[in-house]
Image (cartoon, rainbow, N blue to C red; front, side):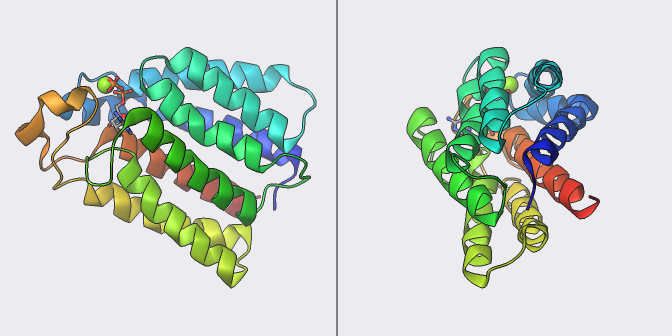
Length: 210
Ligand code: ADP
Ligand code: MG
């Protein structure tokens, strides 16, 4: 379980990771899309770090909500509301709770997945971040049933997200700007699915090294 202050630190660690992955994530998007995904994520990350640092106090809900809102307003385009949804749903799931645990992680991600589907209209197999998110939700539901600790839940979630990301390689992109690439997209990892995997990896690293 993470306290509010640990959640704030984890969100800063996530932002730092997107700063470091800027080039790599843009490269994935360049093969299939317009090559801006890493730049967009890094821009959102810089704004989010500033926002986190400006907040001395806050609950688990407050930090996730501020982070999600910052992403929605600074990422822009379609990706802002889609990716921002994850953090806004983690905020809602944390409402009235002192700690961030497997329950909040699982509930928020499951609702975030639904939100992304209803906002963006993509379905599984369209070669989007959803293909990495969905197996992660399934893994977390299992962790919830097993009463796994947050560390255990995230270890398994990271593996599920990595498999989901890798499963996007043979898929054909149908949604987002990358739909223009169609056949060209086959054989490459989806940028948004990679972004989501790194999000899970960073959460897992943070929780394990605490
Ligand atoms: P854009 O497509 O506007 O250039 P980005 O390059 O930042 O935005 O993000 C591209 C990623 O967004 C894709 O790799 C994909 O994972 C995700 N994505 C695009 N459209 C959708 C959608 N409708 N639903 C879910 N994810 C999507
Ligand atoms: Mg793009």
